[in-house]
Length: 114
Image (cartoon, rainbow, N blue to C red):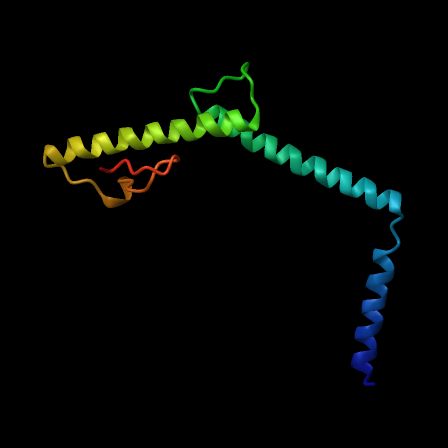
């Protein structure tokens, strides 16, 4: 074997040895901490959604399903309002940039741009 190959194998062994230095208890503690951080990040993002959705309040049931359902309903409402405003502008001869016009389906799969 070449000297370079020996060095690479040696480095790989050192990494493997360092990785196994953690006890099972330490690995479990790291896993628990990582999972708690992940859950905290998810909760933080749900809190942002709650603050952006007028039909959600801090005091009501804030299950993830409730948050997602009411948020989807609110987005559908905004899309419908957008479609109405776009149509009103078109009737008045006002040109709307295409990036401001939503033509996709609603959360229930129906198309609002009829």
